[in-house]
Length: 418
Ligand SMILES: *Cc1c(COP(=O)(O)O)cnc(C)c1O
Image 1 (spheres, rainbow, N blue to C red):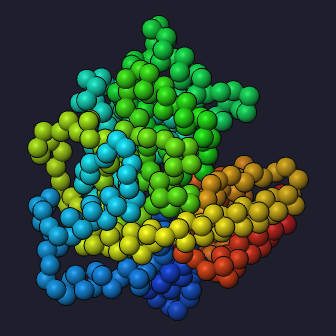
Image 2: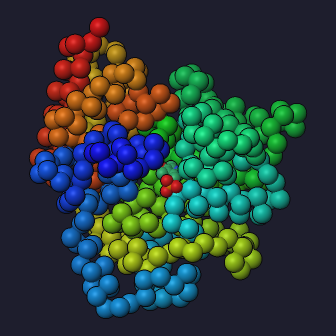
Image 3: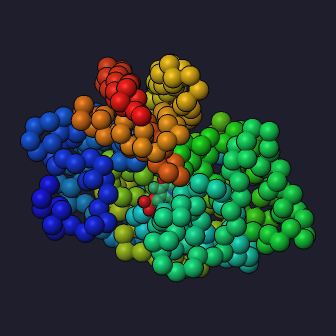
């Protein structure tokens, strides 16, 4: 690790949580340069929903590369982009009404969020954005302004504005309906909250601690957006692409967002690809008004199309996510129940959080787990939640093995806990 400690900036972070040199990966296993193997329950923070180097996707990109097809072409028209948009329309959007248009943004999720916020402000002529406590939307100035984490916000070095934070579902305890509070604050002409251009929400907060919004809450938030003339934006960057079972994480609540933001697992292969789905009637952009050199990278579009064709033409993957998600939840709840009421388990589909309440416990557990061959990340306001995001394509044996390592790591941590 010496080269990384002396040559790479202090800003590096995952090489600290997972101190090893990773040279190869396949499915749910990562291999180190010195021949060790790790089960990956982290999946590039939700970027590798179909596993590492998925061979059912890989063939299409190797073939594309060897044929000298166009890899980079700004946002010029290519067969790769046409095939992707047609496949996405027929496999995912189907006869969804109203219709959506595709906007390929720069390659990061943050850039797609910037585009969504810009478009909302342009369409409504308003500035304010409603975002939620513990929300995370990326690191560029507009996106970080809409993110709650104080450490990240402070890192921006300038004052962040244009966003009003409202309590997420459950933030004020079970008896308090925060959707009702939002509705009241936005309908009241003297609440002090400016009329928003958009309400920006995650259906499950990935970085914020695997906080799950209910169907009723999400529907109420969408209704409020409509009532006050704000756009309703779902940031599905981490929870989309099948993580919660269905392709979009909001399908269970039958939502119809004005803008849907996708990135992370969209390319299906860990290649950078981000986009917005915009309802046709709000596509108010002037040509070239939001540009970027790496929009809609063709190689990523090819792997994205292969992922759609391989996994979304039938419901096999989707059912698998429900089944394995239930299995994970039951196992984690059983583990939690062995320690009275100390821990909480939350999540939907194959996005689960084990809330240790105490940051040091979560830290020790994930460190011990790494020592036993499991990569697992933490999230939440003080990194107190152990976050389970295995690939959706993981086999049962590997899934159970990973859960077993977690259980042992927790038991060992608590045995020596003061
Ligand atoms: C990762 C993430 C982002 C930011 O994406 P980047 O590619 O890191 O810029 C935004 N929103 C959510 C919900 C995310 O998980």
